Length: 497
Ligand SMILES: [Zn+2]
Image (cartoon, rainbow, N blue to C red):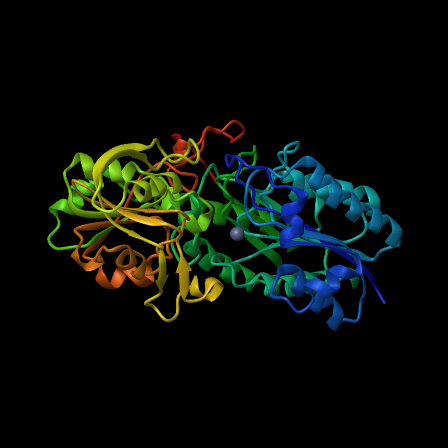
């Protein structure tokens, strides 16, 4: 029976997020060694779960090394990375001789010590297993690929979907490719293209342009029996590395000319569609003016840069600043600001207060706004969701706790100050605080997509805001140090496929 080793390190790194990702963050999510990898990950819909299923179906002798995955966040601490990598290498060495190695990686990891850890992993693994042992690697399509990574793997496979619904299917595919390598049926040869194109996460849906068009053509190419794998990598714009951005890999069976032709054609299609990566949003004052000019209400002002579900603090106050500046009557915003909520509680209902609200957690989400207003109502911040089925109720149940909450009215603007940050998934959040959503001219929501189920049914319109924040689609806000320049849309860039 072939002896196949298995392992992986998975992290999508936001280089600009303040807090590093530690070994404890991997332990909280998923960190397993040896046979524990099989016990924890077999039967799951993950990439490595698909690999295990594909291996077991062929009755291979599986030699699990180590598998670590943490939720997206700041730079991975180098010692955490080394701890997992060294465990993989130690167990690989012990498992030798091996017939093949399957690895599940993300592709957009950055550590405090390395800008391209994925190629480091592959180089270190090669040092143990040599160049002749087949190595097949599965990646998230948000990975930023370096030429070294393409060089060091025999075959790369990547998710074809975003939202990701095919990691398990791609794990099965990785095992099937490994099977062909073991039987010496194929001799992989890969070609790589890296057009100078940076996609904000909001532009990486595979049902939307530009990626939809690329996948349509890649699907036709895959019908060619000489094609082994095609990776359409959107990249992850918040990981600041020399390889950040979109890339494509076509692997054929010993046909370098075909691989090169196909990869250039796909890169050309992506480049042609590049205008589709430009975010459609307005500065807050323009957005508020446009909402005021529209008949009826409420107009939903989408503050996706402060997308609470993406890990932001929920206290960005730039949209509030704009509503106050333009004298909006019946505009509403919810801000997670325990300090301001406590000040309102101390003052009591009916009191007039002047205080700084929002913009307190970090320097990414704008400055606080000084407001003078009246404390309209105080509440315990507990509400029951109106929507029977919503994404967040699946995790938290129907009863939501915002902590001590205050409705502060400044001019015509309703500011709901909460102790805890809660994403805008249900209208009861506003009603519970005392504000009627249907009676508003405009409502600010701190979300990219999750707000839609609750708010679209009552919306008179939707406007996306260009506000500061760690989840901003406006990539010119980030102080890149390693990103290759020029790159579209930050610069005038040229690309001849
Ligand atoms: Zn992804």
